[in-house]
Image 1 (cartoon, rainbow, N blue to C red):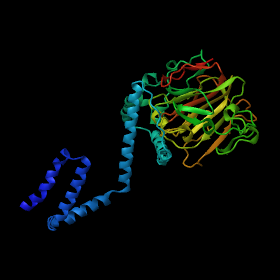
Image 2 (tube, rainbow, N blue to C red):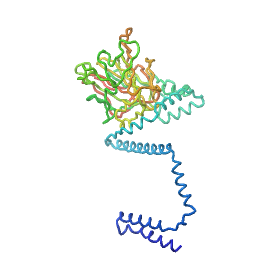
Image 3 (cartoon, helix red, strand yellow):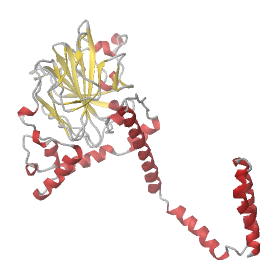
Image 4 (cartoon, rainbow, N blue to C red):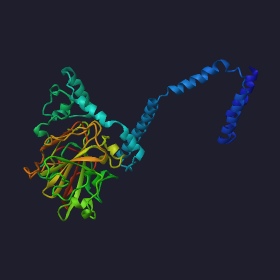
Length: 427
């Protein structure tokens, strides 16, 4: 016993060392004394428990399965991202500008490896399951409470009326709930939050402030041999397939993609991005009087499109599945793009029965074209301002890209909440 105390005495005395020497010297001295004391211990000191001690450590290591490692790593990473998002929100609340922190290639690849398309299809099937009457009110009430849904605007307020989640998400509104502004040329096609708006500069569009994406990557290449924008199928009854890696023809290679979209001299190209949260009204409408000539469907990822992710992943909208409707209005080119998201693989266009989104298999980088202009229909699909156009399965993003004169003005502020029918801009 005395011997043990004697050996431990120098060890205990070292705790006072930091008061008289530097921390680095103290660490070095402590480590050397610790190893020396450990070697001097009798062999029988831990004889009975030595095997148990080492065996327990080995067993604990072997019990760590890959799933546990991935779960712990992923959980820690998600927690860190949530902390960063919280910190950014607090800085924004204080009126300070938060510089975007873009994800690296490995982070985007890791995110894409998550089977979001499979999860979205599973969610879509779950939405179709008819709920028993006694379960409808509790389920819908929880959703209403979580996301702040205003059921007083719904055409049918009785929750028992909605047989499944899909019917609840695509509920219609009372006619007077969203009056359509007739004084302005372009209205909001949906409820949501304004992420960004303005002129398109150098063929780059801002998804949020400071984070851009390529206009050509987003809309896909244009075949200038046909009058309708992007129309490869103008003289074909049905659809056509293309590849987004195709190169522009030599005759138009010297012209930028942005200039090809502007059809009238003196006009500019404008954009507006509207984010639909899960609690928003999920249908979208025609933002103006225009003619839809062409549809281009890009299969792709289904990453989240909430503002935090949009600030994190560059060209997020180009990665995700989307449906581009293009045509023209009184001032030239006009397009509306519905962008898919996690659990929002289902994008429905009411007049397009041939559109099928979130298919199990697709070719990366591919797209599918379809023209609404045929031998029997030279005008395409005419849309009136405020007319029902389509719907999402949950919430997502609408991107408007259109041509207008230079004196076109937006009546918006970044980050503001907007409702369908309210003014976006006018001349």
